[in-house]
Length: 476
Ligand code: GLU
Image 1: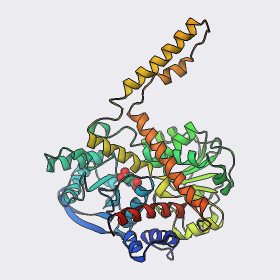
Image 2: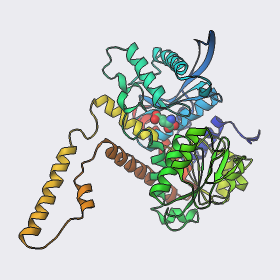
Image 3: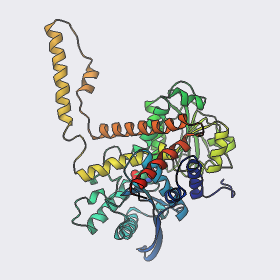
Image 4: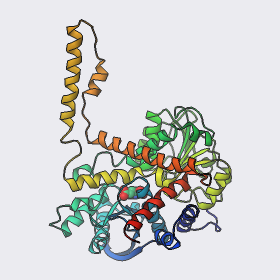
């Protein structure tokens, strides 16, 4: 449980910002300008549901408009409040700067338990919330572009896009008003998996650097590494699935609302998720050990801990007992400022949220570009690429036959070489490149400066530096 002496989430983000700003050469005025949240709009609206009027409270915070549009998800949860939305909006600013998506930072939230309402009711609520935001240009392709977050997904984004289109019938770029839409409604391949995929690419990049692994006391590759994942929602599920199915990691525990599943040999993530979809939780899953209290499982011995649910789950109350040498923050703000200090002292390496979970906004950027260009990625090049590959294969085969060399190209190679990149392949390639480049920018600061202890401060320094540069070039 979170203790009272812990700062709030927003204060925690500010304190982390201050740690980095102290090491930078910013004028106090500019430092303050970057730190503060520009504005938060609160709306209370009524929707007639089940025979009476229900009032809902929603927020849209804009942290920084150094670039526009501003970007960030909309969260549906009962725990949503202004402090949280502002902290998340600030993280969006730094995240976008770090992975070079040309956006400012924003975030939205609606106080609601989405499981309490059926689909039709959720549509009415979402459309009404969207209406309130659209009316004030807080949803707009050139000014503010929301996306999914906890409690929302493709379905809600499709409703928002449609609501915007109804209110802006002549806007040819209407679809770019929101990202994370389903593919049939202007979305892009690979957006749903993007954040989890980004976590995988982040870890792969970390494991390419022996020096960085050594800081966590890790050796070898990802193969065989013991992983604990907290939260098997969209992000945790995809990260756990890809790491176990493609990189040989053993997911020895997953933690959810109703406890945890443990298997030292490694869980079958797809199987666990199917079970969750059918039964609403982990309990009763037959192929692993279930414990009702999930919290202590965070403290189990493992190589990599991936908190992929809520903020503040690693706090002053449990940080001392965390045994993982490497934490990957797939969620936003899972480690509090105080816990971060304790973990650093213990030698734990943390791959920070603003980098680790940036896969989502990166692919959102690709979707936004796709919507503005009105053409699917790969549509022009794919077959041309295939034709050139075929030319080469045919020439190799002709040479081999002519000279009697008896070469045969492996069927598997041929098939892969002759397949042009479709949208999904291009999205993954762009995401991989983004994750690698951003990691390298962080580690460059981490290793080149004596006063930079950890990746989080390095990430903030890179991000704040970029935001500062943009402000300066605007004459601020
Ligand atoms: N909600 C996600 C995040 O926290 C995605 C934001 C976006 O795609 O704009 O990064």
